[in-house]
Length: 526
Image (cartoon, rainbow, N blue to C red; front, side, top):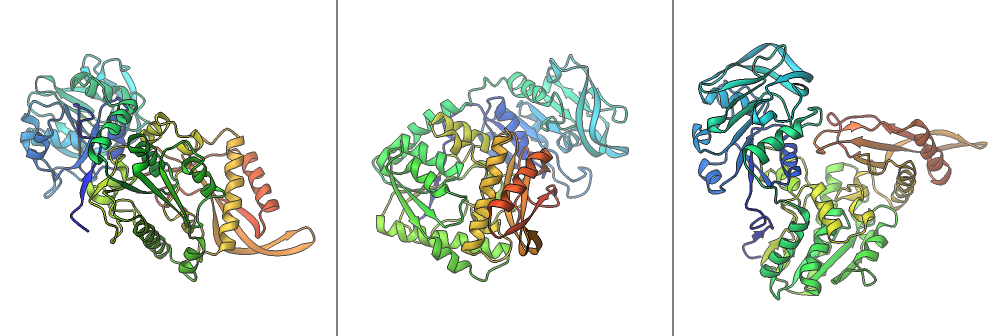
């Protein structure tokens, strides 16, 4: 395979860009999402990114994230003083605020009283950062260091009972520092503060919208592809489906979508994908469905370790895809449904650890003859992908489909994967999803699904003793999918789900509800 040139859609979509410099903060993606909610394009870069690269991007503003370190310690993450001398507005958050103060001549020390959680903050309403913000407002604090001395030229513009400098500013230099986290929802007026920074202080007009994204992306794809052929691996998930819709809008039957049904999808999902993108659907493209269930079950026989299952499923997908691609012959472009969190979490942006092993990023076939990769959604967060899908006319049931892992039900089955276990978890999950929708909770819960444990226990059904499996129900609420809390579903709903699963799903005699948050658990159940 020749050298691969990656092609994304951001270039030319917006003349406005805000840069988030990541110091290892857990909320880095959340900061970027909040900026985009202000209709301003935003990207995340590591603090190791050279200042010349930052300058070359000509950002309208720069935001420094939080981080786990103490900025005064040796070898702590830092940045050159030149960043604050560019004339570009800079907003430091938590660690970023402390670092700004330290670099510019202030002082940071360990606080006598640490602050964590919702905290009453008194703000100076005359500051452009706090325009329209209540004088006393609830903010989310999470720090054990504090700014003990502000840098020359700065003035304190917020405080708490234990933190004399909860925010500081130097308007002449367009520099602002906030000790708390405006990006989290616990900070009641945080979105307003970030809006004040990017739209007010930075002067961004707010041109980042999904209608313009679709329009400009279609134009860019047509220019890039010309009369070339594009091949897309269509999983049926939201990301690959929106990518297929966007590419179809741009180039029609120059696009071929290969849908590998590995037999690990949710109940009836393969048929639903085909109904949207197949010959009877509304999209103009070439659609190939490969029914590879038995092949996957054979490869997974006897395998119980989750990471091994992930690798087998990912590898087998690539092999099946390669076989189909060879039948098609040479194509000019390979398309992928990569989205921005994939890029960040794969270690290609910011400071996030690599935590996912089955990803679009880096998971490329070895023997497919193509020239370049097109990743039309590479710059979007999940909520933006859904907006783009609606803009493209995709069915709402597909656009708002629950997140689904690449390895599918293979990792929602604890232990060995068999056709019988797949049937059990498909049926149980379908009942769960149906009852959640009936209760009007399907759009309010972040993610919910049924998984099959490897626990078998004694039960009594009628006059018979049973020895069957336990199904685990999982439901979490999350903002960024980096952390999550168990969703509180009405007990009556859970009872209904339990009753239906035990009555309707053969092989199950027990249903449990997983209360675990992330961390220490993961959102998935594997």
